[in-house]
Amino acid sequence: MKLHKTLYLKLLLTYLAFGILSLLLVSSLFRRIVLKDLTKSQADSLYREAQLVASDYALKTRQGKEALNNARSQLKAIDTYINAEIRVIDSSGHQILDSREGSSEKTDFPDFDPTSSGTYYMTDDFFGAYDETMLSVFYPITSNFRVVGYVIFHLPMSQIYASLERIMNTCYLVMASVLLLSLILLVFFTYIVYRPLRKITHAAEEYARGNMTYEPGVNRRDEIGYLSDTLHYMASEIARTGDDQRKFIANVSHDFRSPLTSIQGYLTAMIDGTIPQELYEKYLRIVLNETDRLTKLTNGLLELNALDPGGMVLSFSDFDINAVIKQTCETFKVQCDKKKISIELILSGTSLYVHADKGKIQQAIYNLLDNAIKFSHNNSMIRIETTEKNDKVFISVKDSGIGIPKDAQSRIYDRFYKTDLSRGKDKKGTGLGLSITREIILAHNQNINVISTEGVGSEFIFTVARSKDMEE
Ligand code: ADP
Image 1 (tube, helix red, strand yellow):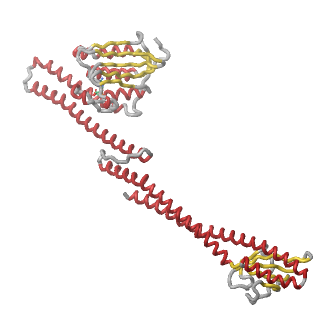
Image 2 (cartoon, rainbow, N blue to C red):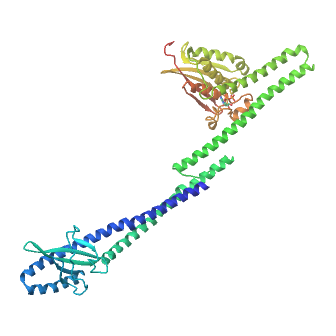
């Protein structure tokens, strides 16, 4: 549970950090850029005005006193129009005209040096003439190619700040809307990621507690759904393996106990004289049979252990598979006779050479034939067929026995697995035969498949590599 909280908290903190950082960025950097831009554009437009006034003033000085008197009222008119104080000073800094006469006591600006700043405007109190910061834009008045004075426009910076605040307010509003909209992401995250993740973790906790049948309940078709399904599948597989192992131990114990009990019974009866000496041979044969069963079971277990991944060592040779099949059939003669089962061989050619581990392939055929006989009805037929196709030989063992139910077909190769159908028929089976067979075939890099219909029969087909240099 803690995990989710941290994850959610992390996302929330990231969201908050994102909000605060963007707010800081907008209120500092963005604000400074806008202010600079506003000041510059205001200065530009005042500069154009100043240029007009300066050239007009230069003209008026040439026209004489009367014209100059007119200039003041003209400046006043412009001042009213653009709401900026206009001052004219001579080249030594002495004030000649002011559109707002008397607004400041200061009329001398000896320190005014327009060339020092390298630009055409300044933002300060203009040499102490004002109490507040002003934007002062200047333009030289020239006469006979000489600078005789300057026209200076003064605009309070508070006006520019007012525009700046208006822009900033709009900007904050947009930002707040964006942040609010991005809250949708948070909601989206909660529903799409956080909640299913919480369900999955809960399921993992249930599995850890041993409740393997727990359903995570995440029904989605994306990566999270896939994760949940995989986890659920894993749990059910673990449960199944555990189940199989329990079943196996029960089977093995049972299979070991019954021959041991009968061996013990016969031997006791011999020792205490219940069985007369002349019948010893008969009963010792039964005892021998029972020990055979035990040996078979033990061998199966040992073999499977040796076949573990990486554990199988194959010794390849070229041999006649037809001969191996015939030989294997021979070993089952007694069982076949007992059940009146006939084996039909449809072999390709008289001899058919393959390249494989002879002993292991013989065992695979043995296991398949053993099953075919075990699960065949009396008086039926088993068909073994070999077919050549390209560089492979297909070997099929087909019976018309009880068949394998569809849902069990994917599990018959699992260790210790026995279908419910076969359980009653074959009490001795260990459920190891097919898994040994499959491991052998896979170790040869070949394939094994089954085609089976419940109540009709089964056909197991596997491949072996054809011998390259010993063709018939
Ligand atoms: P077992 O020793 O029990 O035969 P196998 O691994 O050889 O173990 O087979 C596993 C199970 O597959 C068998 O118990 C049986 O249920 C089923 N099976 C295998 N071969 C056949 C077959 N030819 N016909 C019907 N069922 C079969």
